Length: 123
Image (cartoon, rainbow, N blue to C red; front, top):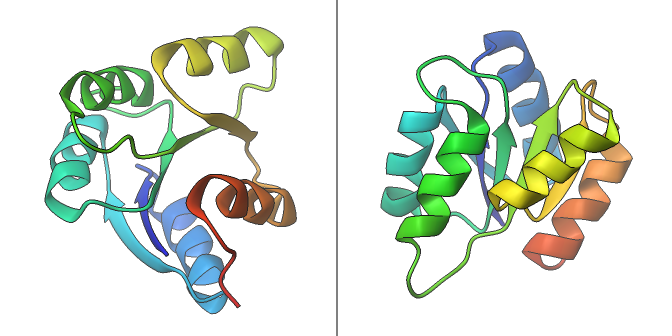
């Protein structure tokens, strides 16, 4: 499974990518919302892990742009945010995200979301 990891913080990006790659996932990166839009359509990933708070363009705004441009395939988007309140979850879902995970990331729970939205879990 190919994952587009959208995360502006280099340490978070590298740590999560290493853990995902050890589980057999292929991981590509975007460092802000604008780049996420370009890479979604250039790479056609199976799932997008979208940080919500980023410079240039937020993950919510990027999600809205992606959803507006999708025509033949809806790529699952899992929001990643440090905001654990219900209102944050609702805002992410309303923007077009399929699921919501809080930071720090609960990795076993994230693997379940990836299996749910991206197909079978990697070995």
